[in-house]
Length: 606
Image 1 (cartoon, rainbow, N blue to C red):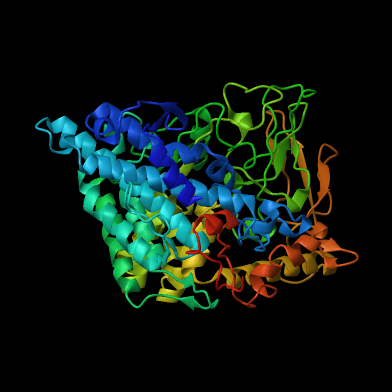
Image 2: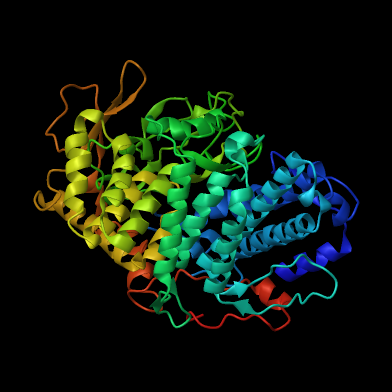
């Protein structure tokens, strides 16, 4: 609905702002020249760009539903034909309402960014004699450029070439634009951020800290989009391509990760769990791991509703925390990819849930429903009510410093191989994952081993990013730019089948893993699993509960559970081109209709 949105702006003269950026309120009936003539109103004008983060298109779709399936997150799209199931199964129609919502949200944000950019760049306040005014206006301009870049990055991942709008909507503009090459778009928005980042403010100097776009986030986004631009992408003929200048963009990623690490380095917080617990406690520390997080106000946001630990609530529940579910389970192949000493596993992968009595117990669904453990509405200090569901107010992390460090390791390796510089960045992230007593083996020796060559180091980066960012729903974008999406899906299915075979045959590669696991709640109220990594004949006493584990991967009729056979089928060998994941979706029908003939769904076997 890009074109309707732009035309609608011509009929109104007010801009939207938001409390905590996500609660819209009208600021003025004056024109943009007035709005961007002073810092306070310009702030409100830029706030309008944040508004789509509070809509369903982002808070439930982009932050969760749109990002499956991968090798570390999954959902069964073949069990229904409704909108989100179509997306999970890579069979989305142009009539899909979720696609329409995301497309419209992206162009709404881009429209408002263009208005803000035009207003600020033409504002006398940008060159004010007052240094604070000039500094603030420059930072606001950086926010607008960065947010616009984010949405174009998303459009490129989901639709490839798209209409490219850089001008604020004005009478006489061409509102019916054809598609522009995604590489051209990415190159331009990367350059926009490069040109402005030096005039932006650090989170510690901003009133909302990491709850608004800041200089460290923009530096990180320069690197992230550069790796996207330098990575692989799907062409309309369903071949994968990479531009000849891709190393130039790895060089940019290296330069700007190093710039952030030089100007604003910070130790990674030692407590990995606390990084995400802070989201539920409404604690947003600056100069820490999270660089920018979407600031959901109470009553907004779906974290802890459709992503995170399951909490059973409702009117009959004995607790007041409400209901939360998990739409994206983690396959046991991912759970068992972790080193057993890696503290991130038990933070990332939750084998438990909270029932209506407020008691912790083994998760319903067992091995097919390992939840993202980083977030839970149960961690809220103020229970939102027994019948509550959406709107937890838990913030969503958009970029972490550990991501910057690993992007640095990846870029350095691509350019120069596994140098000491690349190795140290990988070590920095792994040190937090293990007790210091284990660093000799799990960090130093491990990194030395994977540094035998450029390819082995790259595979180590692929694995490390899985372990570090599981549940944060960025894996899809990584597999796309690495060009190994189908390969990793095939590996996942093969591993799951081998696990099922070992459980049935009592032999094979995974024979030591448990067919059944035993769990209980200890005297301190902690959920404890006796044997998460090994088979035991029987528990030590009758206080333990037994649950099927690897044995549950089998099915008497289909041999393997249907989800193993079907969740990734269109990612591997049943899509329009076997061995290639068609992750590009059709342009929404509404956008095609409103384009008056300039847009169509050609290519990609649509």
